[in-house]
Image (tube, rainbow over all chains, first blue to last red; front, side):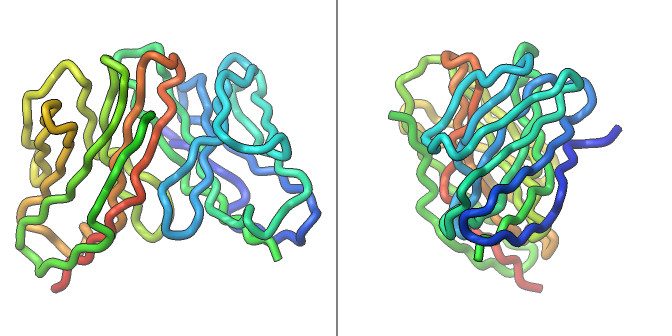
Length: 114
Length: 116
């Protein structure tokens, strides 16, 4: 059973560019959440997608947007990249309607903005 | 406001020692979940344990055990007989059921170094 998979694993972009990160959830999971983890910090919630809709959003600017596809996979898009966007981006999938809402995380995409 | 505090930034122990990682949380919700995750250098967050707000029974699972005390808003995690492979960053997280999304609020993590 494949877990959560993310692509690419590493990415280097220039300030002002746009980036798209991808996530395939764990089999059977219908909810995808994205987190940003700056160096030495805990992950911060960006947003969550369920049934192809953004269900909740954290304290991130509109430059961060996302999408969920009918197969539950998801994309995170960041426009007008800033140096401060350099971080590990983690995707988590879950099935929150079940009794145990623990999320399963992918290995992350490490984004470096230069 | 929801908040998770892990006051220990880094802990070093010698192999086979027991180690306890501290976690203090803040929430106004009555229904919530607490988690511990392990993050090895590869980056993936690995689920370790979960406890819901209605169950304060402390348990042991292999070398892992946890102490959940609502009175002090603490959810401490203990590794017994630590091993070098336990070296990683450990995160405590809070998830509130009332929001419907179960988004996670993480602490800043505790880096555990187990020395051979």
